[in-house]
Length: 112
Length: 281
Image (cartoon, rainbow over all chains, first blue to last red; front, side, top):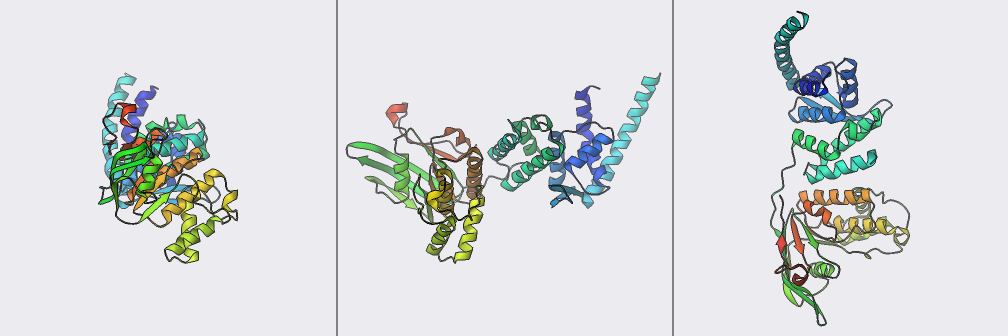
């Protein structure tokens, strides 16, 4: 796939993906990147991911806390706030509303 | 450039862009953690440090530039002659609380002399220095006692301010740690390396929480990492409202200072007079 285009799509929706992943529980940057990759979104570089996390933290949608892991090094754990949950609901449904007709249009075109 | 170098460059870039010191520390620590866990070339994972610092600023913004406070140091018309040689002619510098001034110029142009006059260690032939508040001074070398431990230096400085031994030691060690130095060892000052002795010097000059801090090229013998810590420390002190004057011949740090006083004589540069230029962008 055109990686430029993939990058553009990601820019529009990565924050919502991160909020969605965090709705299942707290996590840290590297783990989030792995989860996104495992889900099939593709590799997300730190240079892309952390600015998004920083912005979410600054706008109060997530809180962050440094903590020692069970074995590993101290990590910065992110957790969704109430505002984050609300933003996920609003932004998530807006995304679904947007992507559904896009899928319909593209699907009809591709399968014709 | 390995990961450590990349992280150091990122640190410097973040400070240069005036990202708040705490926020910058977290950003660097998080990048370091990520690189440790995932491996990979930081240039690929995060991109060039300049670019990543730019992305960070876009996300979290910069610390509000503290508004410069009242004038802490005013040196006006300072002239100094050694015999028939005039080393300083009509040098003037005003530094407010929350500003860093760099004193620059070629070797022998009177930078250290100017600083010693500001510190009151030497009298000018003409001109006047007004200092408002407590003064801290860090000489280029010397200033440490050969047979004392670092801790004993801290206790000594503390005693001058009526601080008990325990708290003075703790304050000294904490300040030393800001420079990346664990000062609690049992090594006499004479056995410390030149760079470490300068860290001790520098630490002592900041211990009294001075309102005006005069630093005469205090970083001789510092390695690159300590040098970065040093400028971070200066940024912190500046943001806390200290008025700082630092003598330097290294011009690559000038974008981190608010005021530049160039003491290179006019006939060498074609300038009309040594004067003040620069300022926070």
